Image (tube, rainbow, N blue to C red):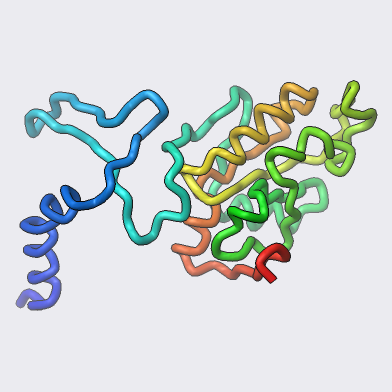
Length: 191
């Protein structure tokens, strides 16, 4: 026999979700797209994006590989990297955007400073010219799939000489980490 609460929730989501979405703030999917329309096996479909209660930032949806050569990773790979002395896991958010704390064991290099701090990641030289062949492997993250801080950090790092192949991207960021109930610590900036 069906659970009445589950049945009621299903009926509510089918009947009322389109009405509720119409009242929510519309957001761009990418910097170029407000919506995506296509024909599917079910007929015409339009994908849109709407603000909701669990969003950390309203930016645009980012690709899994924002810079060629970067490796996308999930939570288990982040946890492995935290335990590996050859890796450093970096929170690229500025102090103003560190919602929900941070991942324990990580360091904070704001995206707009990281290219000037490559020596802290094992590179030699200076902003005038970096040699990063012996640098640590890095995992970068920010607020989630719609946060542009990590992709901007990656672009700046690669432009400064950091090998893209030494960068991993935890695109899920704090949104995915907290939604899975994984341990967080208060960010030093939020104290």
